[in-house]
Amino acid sequence: MDDSKISFEVTIKLAIEYWKLLRSYDRVISVLPPDNRLSSVARNADRKLHSILQEATLSLISYEGQEYSANLAVTAINSDEFEGGDSLRVSQMIEPTVIRNGSVVSVGKALVAVSY
Image (cartoon, rainbow, N blue to C red; front, side):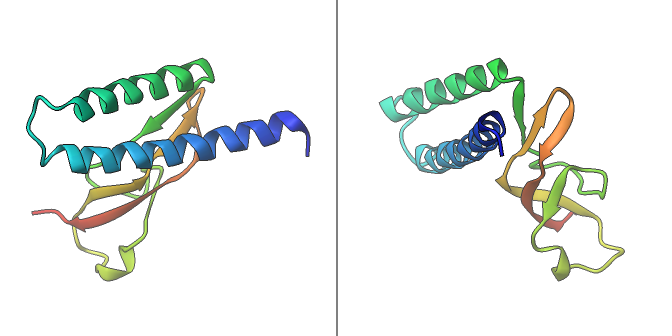
């Protein structure tokens, strides 16, 4: 395997892990007062992540809140809990979908729930 391929795969893994870390920060920040320093630090880190990914022609996609269907580039890790006729929505992204130049390079992982 050549170095550029290793570097690309590592970049994707790093981006996914960084995204997960930022989502963890979001959960903590949601219970803090709105004018806390941690909130601005997390927003800045999120902007930097997306800027760096843009340079690498990568983007991270979250399908949270969207209706789940087979044409979404996401794997529902709990799909076995539902019947075929259930209308589902993506309730939580576990990992984002990674897109490069309009093509999926890493399929996201999500939890789905019945849509009411």
